[in-house]
Amino acid sequence: MIARRRFAAGMLALPLIPRAAHAGGDPFALAGSFEQGGIARGQVPPGTTALRLNGQPIDFAVDGRFLIAFDRDAGASAVVEAVLADGQVVRDALAIAPRSWNISRLDHLPKIPLPSAEFAARRPAELARITAARAKQTGAQGWRQAFAWPARGRISTLFGSQRIYAGEPGAYHSGIDIALPTGTPVAAPADGVVILAAEAPFTLEGNLLMLDHGMGLSSAFLHLSRIDVREGETVRQGQAVGAVGATGRATGPHLHWGISWRGARLDPLLVAGPMGAR
Image 1 (cartoon, rainbow, N blue to C red):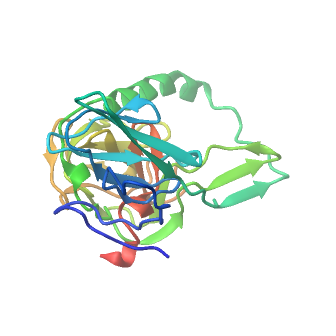
Image 2 (cartoon, rainbow, N blue to C red):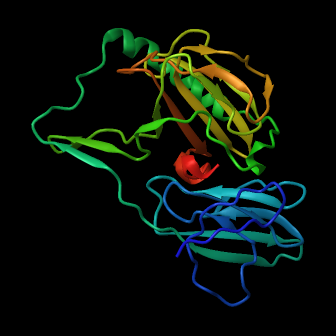
């Protein structure tokens, strides 16, 4: 059974995967989707001086709120730890549910041919810009909000989908594709700061726009026909930031929306909820 709850004003109400009861209750007041590609938010115990997920330090806000997320290929468990001022460590073990992905096996087709010389020459600089953008810390507070869909339409490719060519896996689909006509407005799903606004189309992503929502959470919008905001600009939820297109490696006009947290790829359906929910 999937339940919903909201534990603080302005926080995201996400589907909850039931967690096994344990002594002491839930020390982190976690709410969210505890499954591959999911996201959860919580509150640190009083007196917390440091917070870790699977041994890695993560940030928490002055009011004690924080978020954690689970990659598409996350393992079956995760551990959240808070170090208190007196040296005590509070731990919570999380069960991360596996998911079934849309896998297409193309046994008689070879993997995509090797990239062109032009692609090989341009791609390193593009990847460096994307990596540098994701490393920016802007102090944005959109991570606290209930995310909205940047555009609504027919979902043409689900998050996590993957093709296997003659036994060789291709890269899985790291976002969600929404088929829409060129020029359809794209809105910010939550408050944020523009961390990348490509002034020229990237080889794969085309006109690429990236927003930082704070706490390591960011959105990327690919294949845009135009970008309406500038790097460093603060945007508000629902503000128009660009328009759907087919730039870069795209076979037709659509919006590719990707969400990541500290390198983990997340499913927009688990962050914004079903498209018809709002």
